[in-house]
Amino acid sequence: MELIQSFCVDHTLIVPGIFTSRTDIVGGEPVTTYDIRLKKPNREPVIDVAAMHSLEHLIATFLRNDPAWKDEVIYWGPMGCLTGFYLILKGGRPPQEIYALLLAAFQSVNAADTVPGATAVNCGHYLMHNLNLAKWYAAEFADYLEKNADNPAIFEYPKAERLMTDDGQQFYDS
Image: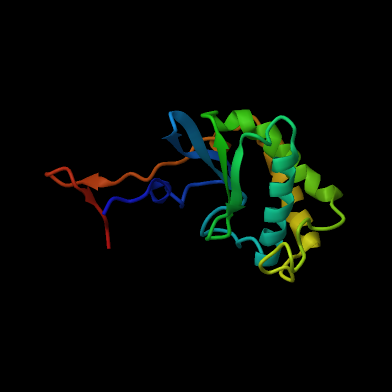
């Protein structure tokens, strides 16, 4: 079975940043999945689950209400490994073109007094939120983005190199 594209990224080298995970053609138009990585995989603690849930609500609300971008947003949600989020947008922009949007989104978390949609009616686990910790993670990532705006490593995925067998099959160490 072929590895999916996100498993072909060398997670031992990835740093926090904004990366193109994949671009698909849907109905003749490009749709791009971005990897918004807040933590270095396997090298630093993952994002607290309750804070991750709050960030999901806060950033999704920001993105879907931004006048310039709301019609482009298809999805915002957490990675299962709790090191970041996936953002799916219409179009095929490079990550640098969504930098300002994501910086503003993470900076906006600081102004939040409540987590939108954190009620039993609106959320599947409304008690699992941590606004204060979400603010801390958001500020940490926004600060990182600002300090690394000119660093190409925050926009370029490190690809995992796989050995090929003589018959063209990828070799996986067990």
